[in-house]
Amino acid sequence: MDNCQLLVAKNQNNNSISSMKTRDLILVAIFVSLSVISAFLRIPLPGLPLTFQLATAIASGIFLGKALGPASQGIYLALGLIGLPVFTKGGGIMYVLQPSFGYLLALPLSSFLTGWLWDNQGWKKIISVAAGVVVAFAIGIAYTYICTYFFLGNQKAIANILSVTLLLLFAKDIILGYIIYIIGSVLSPYYGKNRQ
Image 1: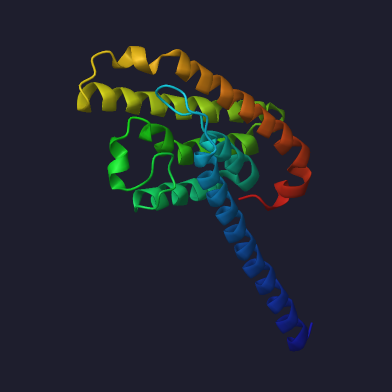
Image 2: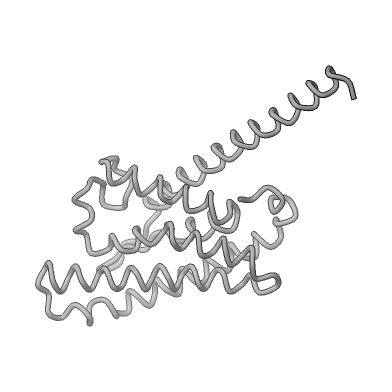
């Protein structure tokens, strides 16, 4: 191989690397946008509104993988904490005092766990969805309890947390997660090679 052929081969390799980075940035931006949109697609219920943020985090883990999925959710969280009104009730650093902030805090971890299990479970990919939902609810419930019991002084916090509303939210997220699982399984031959 002469010098000219080596230079062309090196240039083609660099172009594919830069296009992969551009592709990743675009996909992360799409999932950040979907997270913002999902916060405002809500059904009001007493206590916690029914939103689609966790379903978006699960989808980001499945479609973007264990690195880019959590990155998209972390960017979404950062945008809200710096003051952009991307959360259900606004944004800003004081949002950490909202009892429901624990569910937002769990989104990157839920996305990571879903993506990691999706990559490592083979035919048991269905477990990845349940694990992502369970982790989000465990962190969300713990945060809500701590916030309402210790900071807001609500002695009946555990009864409020384990209400029918919470059961509806959990059922909704499991059902949406499995719909995303089916879509992800069907589309995996098309996106699976390029996940990170």
